[in-house]
Image 1: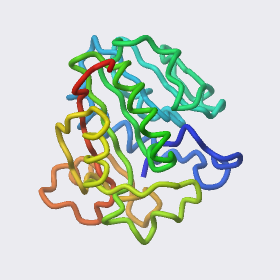
Image 2: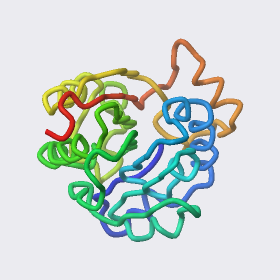
Image 3: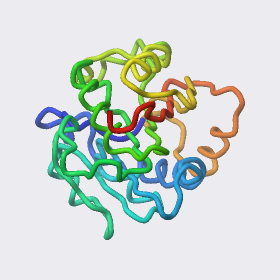
Length: 222
């Protein structure tokens, strides 16, 4: 439903992931109604696989960093957002122990397990001891029919397997929501702040195919 990968193929942004103003409506509402409660004004926030910058442009924080391998990302960032163009497997441009909150939205399914292990090791190093990694992406348990409609998806994850993978790579699971959002904005339903807020409040999520997992480092910097 949202965001981009740091490992996209040429032409991906012109075909599968072209700019859609509905994503701005979605992310502005998600930040205001959900993510801002997880981020303090004095925090340093890293958007890993930032794409068009919808999340990082709308979150309020002392320092905001957008990170993506796509050079076109920087043209979409608002004033005050730092843009770093690099592969997700190379976070050396960010200081160790300096980040409070990392969001990886629709990114990890584009990486091999070996690449993800490298990313997670580096994310642990960049996070403060009290820091959090939030992951939003398709849940294969509920999106198996559509999962490989995106030709850049290379690895299958469900809420169960991704939680286990995080635990095996030095993270402690803080929250796992298997059906946080519908899979895509490309539907007949309008994308409006009212409907998004109403959906987030639902105790049961119909059409929910995107999971949200929040995890903290067990051994920061290890």
